[in-house]
Length: 539
Image (cartoon, rainbow, N blue to C red; front, side):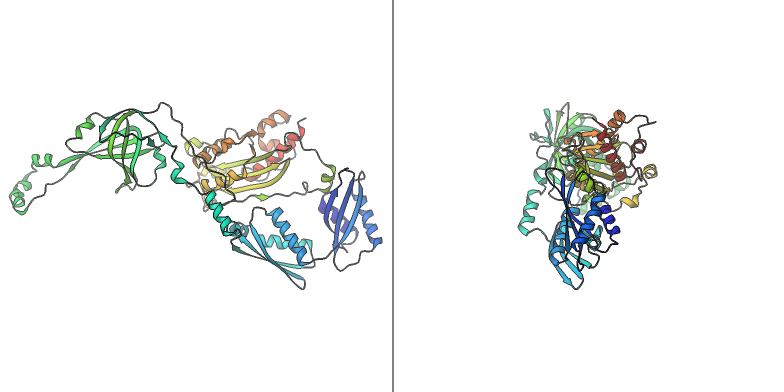
């Protein structure tokens, strides 16, 4: 018997005269005696005789193996009571929303609640229609009263607390790439001065900058003749007028021409266009270099006036030997102290709040006991992360000590069109993800959601995990540090007599409802419920 149904039965048998509500149920340490406190509506007398009859009704509903003490308490509704209930609701059901209660005022049979929602949480509160949710919950508890919640945006943290948060978790981008350098050997100076410092990662440089050092291989080397006319006074112009009309003076052209050498420098982490403007002294240097040679260069990184892309104007160049093995150094970010873009939602089911389940003290399966799992599922633009496919939806639920407690869900903007084949499977189209968080934003909050958890999914090792770790790495979030597992392998071992091991088949075999298949959060929830059921099978 669930809590709500227990009280529904009591109210039904008493013609809803007293509007009973469950206040608490406390199981004593000897596990055979339970104290149950029940509210009844204000303004009504509940005699001892009526209390005894209600106690008998409750005993007939509840398990026989326990002894009970019933306490009936008048549900006197005061401003202080509403304040306590409001805080309990916020802290239990909306824990991720930072707030400050300003006042609770009563005018006849109506309560007005005024509170400030922190700027970081305000948009999320509006999206959830938090004020209406709170009003409805309180109205369900106190039917004889009206409730109005007024929330305004503001600063909940003290200024010094907020500044401390910003300082502690501010990205130190200036120093973040200090360890991301490439050492080369066997340098042979061809142009300018020797380059003593190591090379930067090409992918790390996104803005114009002086004295940038890169290394890599030459690709598509070209030389382009730049023609310049000599400066002339009026007399020279008049004397040369006739000759320039007929033909160009080859000697003058040769004297006032130079070459621009252009190539693509292909590095370990990207490529960049390089240019060098030669003169007659250094032009022969380029007879010594060719495509596929390894070089290290230093110069000015600037925006090309034609393409707008970054281009390196080279001033120093040396031949070199590149490292035989290269492994990118990732400077991972730290967990944020708050959710910034997507906040998880608490999940409370009747089964988990079941008074009788609580009294029966159901044993948590060893596989789940004392552990936290995050069961997640992705929808993507395609099947291959290495080919550039991206996450377009994240759905996840958290399992704590055998119970599903929270869910995390959001579309993700892949910053490119979703292929029709992908939309046909997931039902997600470009308009759905328009305005959704980018991957580096959503993965920031998902990283916080998964700390201390074992990551699981259904057949996720070779798909969802690849996207999570790969895209997380690109955004500098270290999901590879989490322990991982796969519900698919448990299904293969413990679920027998099925025609295949697809999630839908296994869910049906175990009595788990799978709604909206191929939508991330529903697949994640079904997988979590399958996992819990299988965990109970394991001896």
